[in-house]
Length: 185
Ligand SMILES: Cc1cc2nc3c(=O)[nH]c(=O)nc-3n(C[C@H](O)[C@H](O)[C@H](O)COP(=O)(O)O)c2cc1C
Image 1: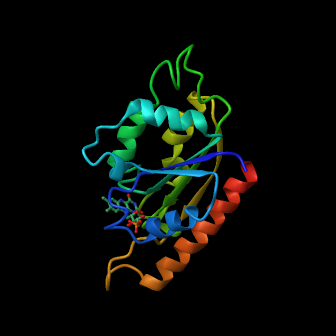
Image 2: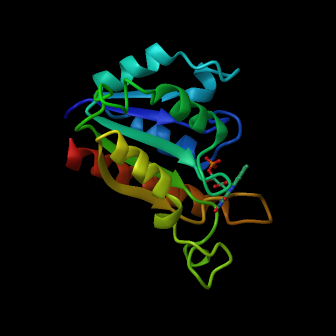
């Protein structure tokens, strides 16, 4: 298998995560995978741009693993995108370093699937809401792989969902993600 880089954008993977923690646990069983937990590496958001760009250069497939926060990526992941995908590296006439790499979004969505449509309370589809990331990949010359998405992933005891069911969906998500990575690698 070719080299895969997983950028984990959860703000608190080890303290405040159920779904993403289980998905990353599954990825950790794979070889040829470099997993970078941004909030652990950069608790103060001071991203080491060179180290992150070096990690991108080593990879053939780049996975962004994140919980959907306010219809977008969590702040630490947006900071990584803003700083690391820099002019002259990721875009611009000489910014060709990511050309031809695979780009795979893997996200856990709190709301149910039927909330993400015109008639639903979130109005837009996930495909529509992911378009800024799709276009980011395109501008960087990367191959946009079909995202791995799971719904109903929020767990708040006695309010949203049953813990065991969310855990089950997270494990399925992990298997699906590993299979998607294997397919493109
Ligand atoms: C700050 C914040 C914003 C969120 N925004 C959304 C949202 O826009 N849409 C949605 O469906 N779920 C939203 N959620 C729910 C998360 O997507 C869900 O809790 C998460 O994917 C579960 O993964 P975890 O257990 O690894 O944290 C939000 C949660 C938080 C904490």
